[in-house]
Length: 119
Length: 110
Image 1 (tube, each protein chain N blue to C red):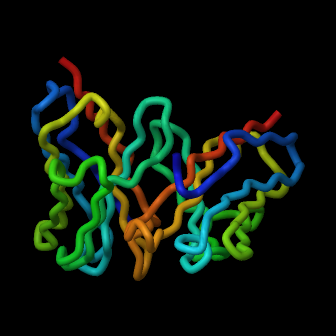
Image 2: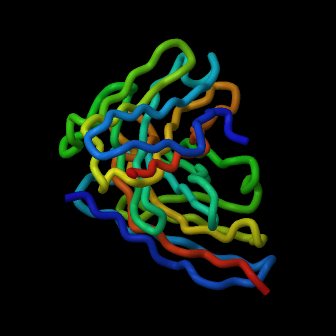
């Protein structure tokens, strides 16, 4: 059974940093693209970042380019999102997702982790 | 403002059939697959339809996807109270070189 468990969220001040982690189990992580998707309060889903199975290709939405870095450690079955220069509009629930075969569109998701950016 | 346009709301009564539209362009729906997700805020999203029309195992056949040109639709037949949720379409956009979601449609079961 595919399981994804996010951790590392919490309250951080504007300008601060946070690293989200996603522990994956039940499938060979190296074979699948992974994504981070977020939902701000009262808003819709927004793709934040994606990374290919080997980590060689990454995607970032414009609003996080230069501030967020996605990475993965396939040997540890882990996905990461390093977030820096955080802003109030980064406040959201962040979900990690396992891409369906040959795409980055998730077919399985974690339960989400809340990140709150506030002074 | 998303490049994929969905109606903000939809509604139906139990047993009814409802459809949710997703309008895009040649750079996204016109040439790439469409995906549909069901989401209750605070819970994990659920993949309902992938590659335009395919249903993952475990998704009831009450849910179906279709696509024509630069638009796609999600149909839900035999509407149930538990279908009340937010629904999102998604596709790769070649102009943006990235994946995009529609703005989401809140489905209410009356």
